[in-house]
Each structure stands twice: as structure tokens, then as C-alpha cells.
Image 1 (cartoon, rainbow, N blue to C red):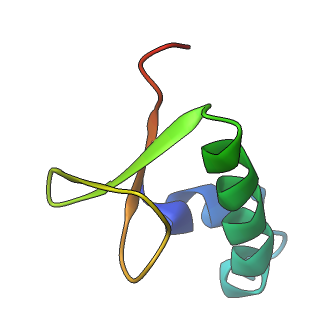
Image 2 (image 1 turned 60 degrees about the vertical axis):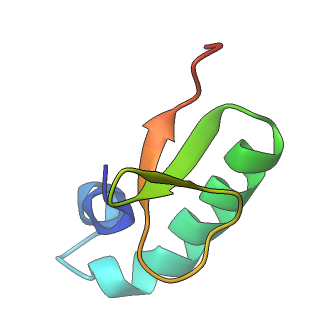
Length: 60
């Protein structure tokens, strides 16, 4: 899933851009905990940098 989709789902009054820092912080934490994985164009990413997609880690 795209991080902006998450931001749009939690944003109030359509202010999803303001929610992006919260989404990025949560993604960083979930990656560190091994709960999600990141990718871009089907290639795995080890850290969040530039455009990325969020996926469930295989062990959860």
C-alpha cells in the first residue's frame, strides 16, 4: 500500500499531507519491529527513502 493511502484514511477534513509525518514515523517503527516490509517497483528496500510501498512482513 502507498503511505499516502494510509494518510488519506486517517486525515481529518482531507488534510492528508499534514498526516504524512505521522505515517512515516509509524512506518519506521513497524519496519524496525519487523512487522512490515518496504518495497518500490517490486524491489525490497531496507529503509524508507523516496517513494515506497508498505507490505506486511511474511512472518506476521
